[in-house]
Image 1 (cartoon, rainbow, N blue to C red):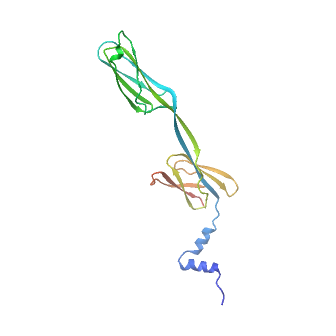
Image 2 (image 1 turned 60 degrees about the vertical axis):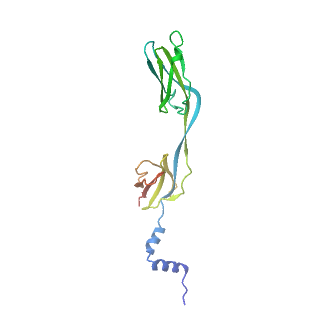
Image 3 (image 1 turned 135 degrees about the vertical axis):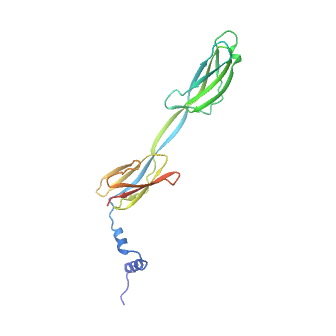
Length: 218
């Protein structure tokens, strides 16, 4: 009696299970045009306290109950106000004889944003100049690549997914092509990364990342 080889047993098992053996073998014969990893670039923001304080002033004149409001903004484009600094002591300069600063009442510091704050002062009927200051922080941004994804093949006619974190500032495919070329394909919006890689769909159901689906042209 002729024995059955392991390969024959495998093929029989697939056929008996209704799996199209020919299609399965054809899929195994597909030659990828290259292999890729997906690389995401993240941005980290750090706020560093600095010694220089932001300053705002306002002034009133003699006569009648008055209120003046000081506007405080940061001293540079890459600097923000320290919104936790709400206990500063404003300075008063009397602009008339006597002790006009004794009658000043300080209002609270109000932050409209990290780049704009106000503080109002009731000065009575006296001429004074009020000066208030707020601590500041310098905003420093660091750009760095995250570890690459698992390497995957670019199989002609097949789909593949790229997971893009919502907080990533950039994503790219770094690919080793079958002809030996090293290629980089930026992932920009919902466009085709290259003529051989076509955008198919975007799934935003996950809260932290988008799933971008692409198809490799046959």
